[in-house]
Length: 520
Ligand code: XMP
Image 1 (cartoon, rainbow, N blue to C red):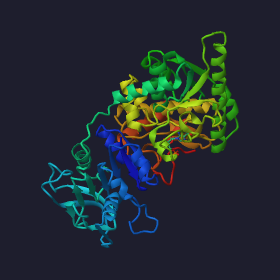
Image 2 (tube, rainbow, N blue to C red):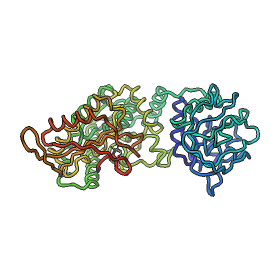
Image 3 (cartoon, rainbow, N blue to C red):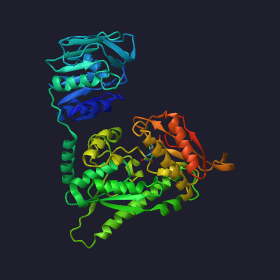
Image 4 (spheres, protein in one colour):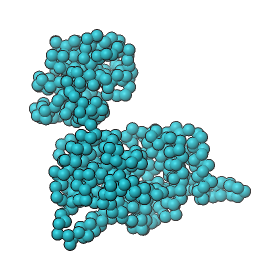
């Protein structure tokens, strides 16, 4: 394992991600772990991340020199680079010359590990105020830029390396190559971490954890729960039951498609489809407040899931071989684990994760086979397990479904109207080849708004729908997607012609922040 020591960078996870792209397993650890604790995990190499602070700031995280003396190969990035210099008596100075953003390398030394086979003609992504002005003893300076006389150094004897910039971000031209040079040449590691290995390893771990017991998994229709279920199904077969709750707030044909695709891909995992449309719609009758809607949907979801669970137990009560349903499979991903402060053991689970809010007090042990993976790795695992693209490449869809895309009261008629419009939007975006480019495109029905239109020779008085196409990396921030005019115009024409009751299509051009992606 390559451990990324997080000095408070927004990039620490990204570094781990890039190391894994180099087919070497990597995890993030906080800088608050002691050197002893870090080394006790026997890292094959350490990468010290960037951080927000200056090494001179009060309370700036300090690098324990013990990490540099253990014989473990080390790469320091940005703040990590400066803290190596500071720890080994190099000079870090406030040069006053801030470098931020794209910078050109000026020089690269011919003989070095990190830039083997590269020339200086490359752009690197910088973000620093202080600069290393003198490398520690024993280090060769291997690159420089206008604002950083010592932009990279290395000591190949001690296997300690560093660069002032951020090779992990996409804006650095040869960043990945720099990281790989460190991993393969500098640290002498072999790339062996592959999707197949991940699956084999997880299957073994799941078998060990669950043993003879049974497990259930709530399927939401999203990627994570589907891949987690498929993985557990491969490990324990029929001991797993998946539960899919149709709350009536899904999009057109969605429940059928999920049932078919999932069943086919897992070679027939046990799947219980619960049709709870009436329960949800009854509970939502008369409700217009967004938070109240969310709470009702979440709570009904839990009750329905618990009922399904009770039914599973009941159905096998006469089977003497039936074991207890002890485990709940969750599709928790690595970013959730890191964000909730974990990394080891059972970190607290975000309650909204996956299936729209399972209760915290539910009496299960958790099985979380995706805890170590990033989203795109989950997709790769899903594909290798045979899940079709329509599941694996699915865009995000909120747990409360169309219930939070109808502004106003949620009724069956309004849902049907929205489903029709939404199906057209999805179809046209797919035909235009925009599914990968667009993060997701909520279609929102302004159910309490009506406007006057004219169609044929008659006056109409219908509802508007809002298109909310966005681009995003992680849904934390988003921008409105610049969907080509011809595609928008086709969507608009089709909706107003084909969906009786909708006579206007409007486009949401708000970024996030300040707007959220969903309207409620
Ligand atoms: P917002 O609207 O907060 O959405 O910008 C960010 C992302 O989260 C999705 N979303 C949800 N997903 N349960 C979910 O599983 C929810 O309650 C929920 N609310 C929003 C939204 O579609 C977007 O991708």
